[in-house]
Length: 84
Image 1 (cartoon, one colour):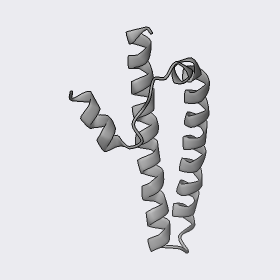
Image 2 (cartoon, rainbow, N blue to C red):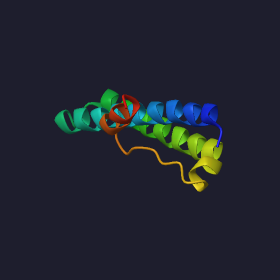
Image 3 (cartoon, rainbow, N blue to C red):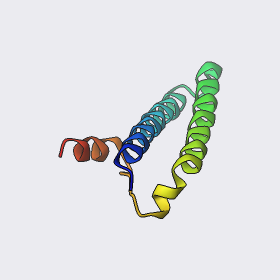
Image 4 (tube, one colour):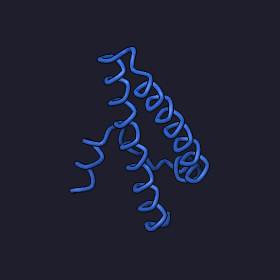
């Protein structure tokens, strides 16, 4: 496995995790202010961005995933593994 490619995948995955956090924050804001249409639009935009990044990531790095390279489920775990 190419270490540079794995490093690129890890950076892309970190971005995906960050987008997921932004999406979760937009959902929480919508729960706080359910009638706010701006927040609803932001949530929908973030959901689309996350979907696009997930699709892009899966297409771009499917070979690594099939080879058994794993990626942490959350940013805290990701950051912890990067400091090792």
